[in-house]
Length: 314
Image (cartoon, rainbow, N blue to C red):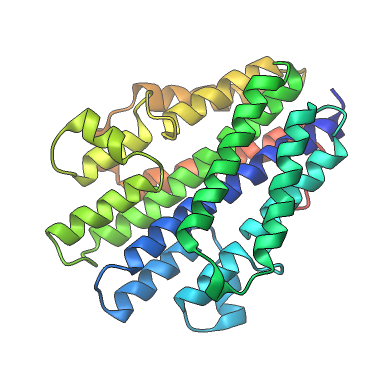
């Protein structure tokens, strides 16, 4: 496959996944903001949402003090923020258009119609936006894209580049979300009791894991078990282990003469998650583990770019 085509398929998938992850993060932050709390605690939650995506400084440079409505607009609809949901879906559509001949008609129509509706939604005043409905719409459109990919595309190199982009982006976002939200909640910025339960539940709902947690553990939510579910469980769709299993498999499907070291590093990281224990992760420090994980994901992304793709501007 031409590197230009691989690059555009890979980034199309990453942008769609990134849009969904930002929607999930905003959804849980918005839900938390509805719980009775001080303004300081609410603002820390909104700042955490910015930190999770590495956009706190860009926001503060433009808007100064943290404000929930401004953060919502900045992360969801701001045309000047390259990582807003608006720009992620636009970039996904542009990449899809460039490789339209590689995609099935259903795949192209799904990505294109998502962008067209997003543009219509972004034209409305923020005060008229039903936030909960908008976040659910983004998640549904992302799920639809994945379903159409599985159901209509030949499972060839193009398919594997899409899968690679999706799961690399998902792994990075799950790690960032867990790191920022875990430390925000564990730092005692909640009222305890029912308030803690609600906020831990909101964190799990942000990755569609609340019902899964109740089914697997069947008792009260604890930080250790939340982390175990999102890091080490191989049956949890958004866990780090599941994501790295998919990344490892995709890389082996598209291997070329340059990619041996990239495949080795992906396989090593997958093996560490496969055979890791949550007790060891907490003993070394969860923050240290997640920071190191995101660094290794970034390294994989850079190496994938060198081995298979065109240099990326973003």
